[in-house]
Image (cartoon, rainbow, N blue to C red; front, side):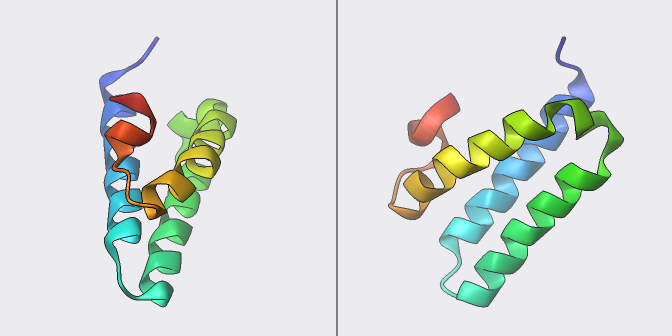
Amino acid sequence: MVLHSDLVNVGYIINLLQMAVNSDNEDKRQQDEAQVHDLIGSDVSLHEKQGLIEKFIAENMPKMLNGENECSASIC
């Protein structure tokens, strides 16, 4: 069951990942990615989904870095 808060968190995570992808600064990109990983690790509501989210990031971040947006990369 997907809760409203899960949708907000996933949307926020996707936005952070998109900011990372759009960043011209490698340090800023890594900082944004680290923020996503910190959020996933610290948000109790995401603990059960942590593996799934990490898999999504691992599979889709390279696609996003190669010019695909998050929708064409996977879920929209």
